[in-house]
Image (cartoon, rainbow, N blue to C red; front, top):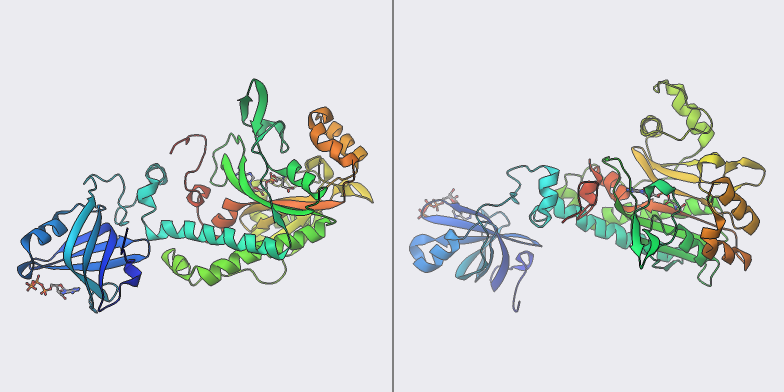
Length: 434
Ligand code: ATP
Ligand code: AMO
């Protein structure tokens, strides 16, 4: 639109055309105010009924809330106006009239349940506190990309239609692919590993992963955004260092560039980027800590995975981001390397927020014979993975990496109660559209 001025840029003394949504109309009798909202904020438009053309007053005051309009007029300082300036209209154009029956109130005066909000995401995103989540999400992705750049990584894109799963057979979405069995990818795991043996060596990918999780929880999605890292000649400790750098950078970017958004969410006081090194506990130390609290019905023993309850107990004890290292080999996937001096213990690690797991990673098994053995031990057919394993015969360096759940990072950063709030159009068991 030619000559459009954002409301935030409307300067007293100028005559401007502002365009946006009718946020509110307040008619006080002789004087009435229309609050116009655009992506940069809001501005008051003043209608002095006796002094203005009747048609103009009628157009401005009879328009339905949430209609799209444009207003041309002089900007003046007005201390009583919400933003300290107001527009006295010369003309008002109704561009797109809204139905008076709105399924959701974007002014936020009437609360809506999450399903209603998700069904009407366009209207929901007109609210400052909802929009703020996605502005922050964009800043997180920008900061994360910058952090990967500092680590000399190359951004890659790997296929999302794949022939094999990697993260456990029950969570795959099957699709038909020209009569062949195929799946939506669960993780770029095998592809990112193939890159460390290529000329690229150190890579990252930000992309969708698909998991047919049966259960409905506040922290699982069926389509999530995975932030993946993989580097040649790294061991698991170097991969953890990289993970810490990336997560801290995301927080720092938000602290630096999203003050307005944090304010819209009421977080301006409490938001803090994590400082200092994330503590690194071994799995054994984690079990001891959890068992010492006596809060679980049954103490955990070596080989147990950590339940949600165990994660919460431990998170409360540690109280900050932390790593759990040296997991039992038996509960980590085939591609994770075991320690050379103790095969029962793996180089796998998880990075945790006090409330949930954010990252899994580890050093990878790069030795062809051991890799094939690992497949057999986990009951997988190495032949189905030949496209992957065979590259380990042609020079594959030691390497390590990790995957970070993008929505979980944002959810924990902002204290959102449901992971769906961090996704524009979430996919879960009930939700396939919009
Ligand atoms: P008239 O102006 O014809 O007497 P009125 O009595 O409805 O009609 P005012 O008394 O001027 O209007 O104002 C009504 C209310 O609106 C008052 O509380 C006043 O403080 C407020 N008000 C007036 N002008 C502005 C403005 N430009 N911005 C914000 N609030 C305003
Ligand atoms: P993992 O399966 O632990 O590891 O996934 C890594 C991280 O991705 C996020 N995540 C999810 N977030 C929302 N909904 C889901 N259904 C979901 N599933 C996973 C979590 C989790 O910590 N290939 C390995 C990573 C690696 O070793 O590099 C992997 O996928 O935050």
